Image 1 (cartoon, one colour):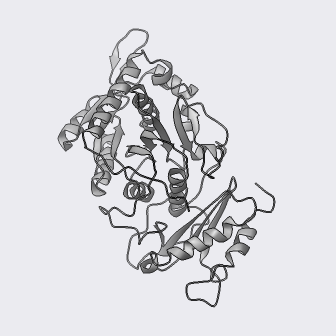
Image 2 (cartoon, one colour):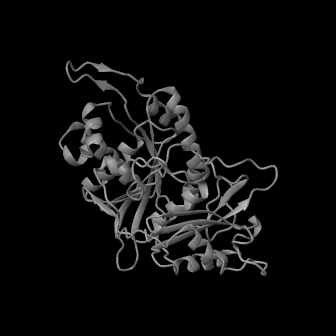
Image 3 (tube, rainbow, N blue to C red):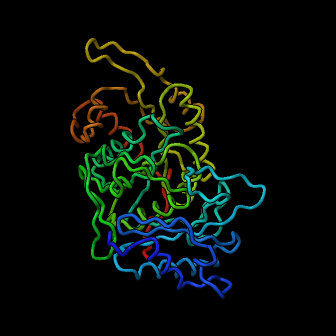
Length: 389
């Protein structure tokens, strides 16, 4: 990052932007917060009245333009935030030491965040036929491993596939695909996705060191994800798999509302504790009108590599039974197996490196079932397109 690209320089540039009422600038008026600089990208938030968010979109664009003129800036993303109304619940976002109280996200260029069940103005990505979310109600159920191998399963069917690691706080996709390095820009100033086993790949893990925590709050995370969706040169893809963050908080809901998802795959282990959270994930997608392509039961059973004996360590069949009870498809069960774990740790996903294994066949079958649902219209949405400002 250039030595002269500092937070102070960003704030000085923003002083050229007048407040909506005039007579001052947005910095001196205390409207600018959460200025973050990362790899020649600048992120910041502007506090505005909730009922004027849509009308103040020109202010956001003017602020981005002022910062973009600084030397050494490759990208700018401003987010409008608003004080929440008295008596409303605080958002479920990850707190930081510098978090300002009583704020909730308002998507850039849209009206205030829509109520549950509403779909806001979508983030559009051109050239992608279907966007599929892989989600889980809780962490630790193997969602990211499933997402990577599902993407490779789509590819094995002859599809053009990309994967977006939307887990800003705990990105796993670079490690699972054995990728490292920094993405580059093309001539149109779009980010060129990394390439892994024929997949187009984008992750926050490429932009921050593996051991560096990301401590942004909800609005900043949404801003970063928006950039990774609409400012990446994905090219022509049949499927973009999105590895969602675990849980059903503000970030997940906003992503489900704003991204034109063709469908969602919910990953769970068989035991009751995981299924409780899987139900919440299903309910979240139903509330925002995203079709659920089905449940996957991960770590479904264990086969001893020495004796071949089967052990249902986390119980068995719970996700299948839950899918039947809730009236959603059951896509398949994936065993708890050392080869899957070892290949994941090594960055050599089993579908790509052991395509003739029975485990790879399971992932390909799940991908085929998802593709059949997508092509059958279960989750088809209008093809998205990127808007670069």
